[in-house]
Length: 257
Image 1 (cartoon, rainbow, N blue to C red):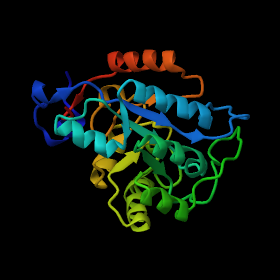
Image 2 (cartoon, rainbow, N blue to C red):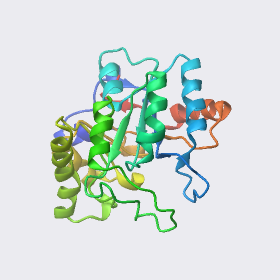
Image 3 (cartoon, rainbow, N blue to C red):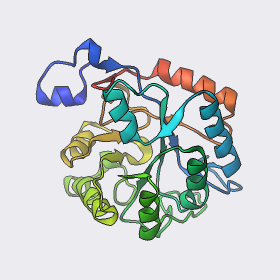
Image 4 (cartoon, one colour):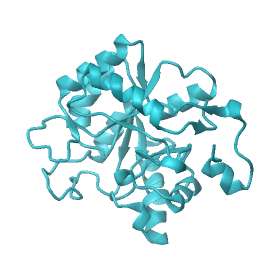
């Protein structure tokens, strides 16, 4: 098993086998709302979202933030927890996702773009234009117990950014979100899921405790956590299959129990 990036960067050996655990289940959502025009398949309807959370509950699972999941795993109490993450900071999170989360008593992590608050998803050329959360709506979500993380400043591919832009997308976005919410920001999410060692180093150096990717392969670690995409067509059967394949195909995560 290859050493984690953190271990390699310090020039130390990989963590002992006792500290290597199965990949955590981190679910990746984007938009919860109207999906009549959804070319990128990033939207689930509120009704489907409700049924997916009901499936988790029936299995004795509870949705939590990434920070809560990692802390529980570190303490050996992570069994039965699933991290629920939402990328891009769409405005429909407050209207549609948040009420369902609270109905089930679940937590979540919301990754937002402080450089685009109140804007839209201009990075998606096929549309449709989806409004993003305003600063007040981000604060509202944080006040309701949602963990706020950074998705960078402006949703760019970090693997193509120069050093100055990379620092702004990581360190500056964290500072702005901390100021906005009045709380530390522990999590980062790589736009488009693209990640390399340079991006991971920038995120780690900016002070983030963890970062989410999609399928980082050999870079898997605390600052490149794999996630499981959840979409509109994920019924109970598909969710079960996806979960099993996720655990089989993804690398174990060092330094996470």
